[in-house]
Length: 104
Image (cartoon, rainbow, N blue to C red; front, side, top):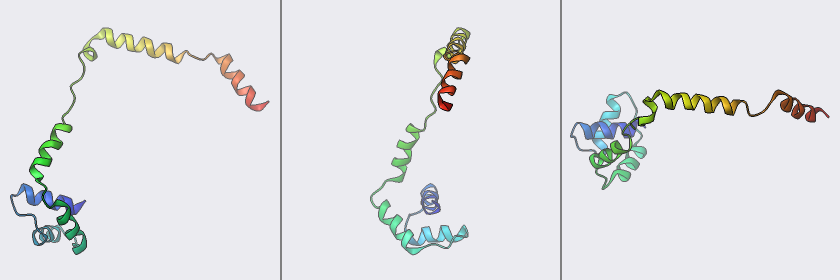
């Protein structure tokens, strides 16, 4: 991941993203850069507009506004009632009968 972070840092700084620059960023961060990994990242970024990709990613990461019903007290009360009904589903006797079947 640090290789990708280095490329993103270079992009944010407006610097060219090439092997020499990326290796320099990694070295400055105290990471011994693996030439093969740097070359692989450069090959995978070839022809990619990082600014465009980041702009698209921001639209997917936008927070979702809460629904209008979540602020209404009636909606909260209805949800609590539904939860109580669901909890009652199996009586203690039915549960005990199910357990006794396990032990013969």
